[in-house]
Amino acid sequence: MRKGDATKARILAEAGRLAAVNGLFNTSLNDVAERCGLSKSGLFKHFDSKEAMQESVVMDACDRFVDFVWAPVQHLPAGRSRLEAIFERQLDWETVENAAGGCLIMSSAVELDDRPGPLRDKLHDRLQQWRRILTREMMALTDPPLDYETAKMAAFEMNSFLLGHANAGRFMRDGDAREAARAAFRRLLDRTAKPG
Amino acid sequence: MRKGDATKARILAEAGRLAAVNGLFNTSLNDVAERCGLSKSGLFKHFDSKEAMQESVVMDACDRFVDFVWAPVQHLPAGRSRLEAIFERQLDWETVENAAGGCLIMSSAVELDDRPGPLRDKLHDRLQQWRRILTREMMALTDPPLDYETAKMAAFEMNSFLLGHANAGRFMRDGDAREAARAAFRRLLDRTAKPG
DNA sequence: CAAAAAAGCGCACGATCGGTTTCTTTTCGT
DNA sequence: ACGAAAAGAAACCGATCGTGCGCTTTTTTG
Image 1 (cartoon, rainbow over the protein chains, first blue to last red):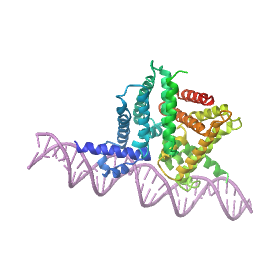
Image 2: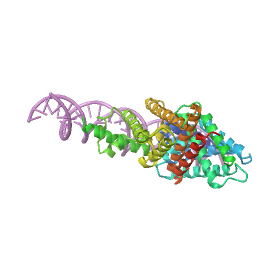
Image 3: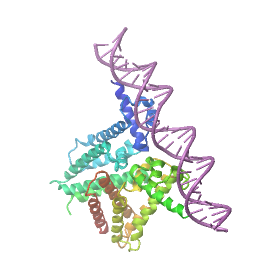
Image 4: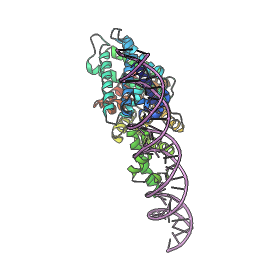
């Protein structure tokens, strides 16, 4: 069962790239099979249905997101520098790690926002979990910690700037998108850290 | 040529709703025809191809966006109150006017962000035009006017909060999304209007 | 009111969709 | 090294995709 795991990982990676560019529901099994260099029936040895494959693809993207953004900063002490590192890694996640097609999680959230179903629910849970992490992280910006409501608002703004960065950089092709998001986030931390 | 225009308008409206929910590229001609009470071939009397219909649908959505957001505030004097009205109308556009499926323009921008073609180009132009309007509007926040770079940054933040509102409200089902976006925007205006 | 034009339907086409079946090859535990 | 199990290929299924063609009905116009 070792060869199979390798191809399964390859399928998840290639299908993820295709879905990020063409959309999760606009990627056919033929597309994935061809890109992976195997036949359509070969895919079904690893997934029971297209829907099951989509779910694996999205969940795998979430796992890789956490590995990429969270893992390398979790050893840092909570506070401003870790927040800045998280933000920077998320900018990298969008522009570097997912250079072709952008962030699958973000585009899937838009595709799924009015499509009830288990996939939507699972992605919703993962994103809510991430929002809680960001809020907790934001509370640790000051000593004593920020109150929950203030931190939640700051987390909303932080997330908004990341969405704005993706929109400005990827669709509008604005070369300054990264710098704009970074500056906005820095100002957010400045005014949140010090009262008044 | 009067009856035809009415049905064409109906097609644009229904196709727009379907595309907002299911995605622009995931809406079949069968879906649109059935929703309009027409046959599939009947659609081709109004559009030369599916691609041409998609383009008309998106451009029509842009027109309706301008009518809904800009038209009712353009008689106000430029400044903070008009900026607040624009923001409020955009919140309404997302949650009230497009209650089912959300804003087609926003979701189309995500779908098209890595799909080169005339449709992407046309939507890009419309959104860039809108960004220019917002930047100009932001410059008029103070007297004397803000410098261009500051206004551009503020417009980026404003747009980010609207994206954050759509994400939080529609996908995350956060009931406080509207209030969060409004509060973030108000703070943005406060700190941008007064120096320091 | 008649002629012309527009609107719309039914049908069939080739391609592709997600998915299944049958069969061959490859891999792996023992 | 051998047999079982997994991996994969090829052909195929019914359904649906976008799109033409030919016809009828409705609407507009002279």
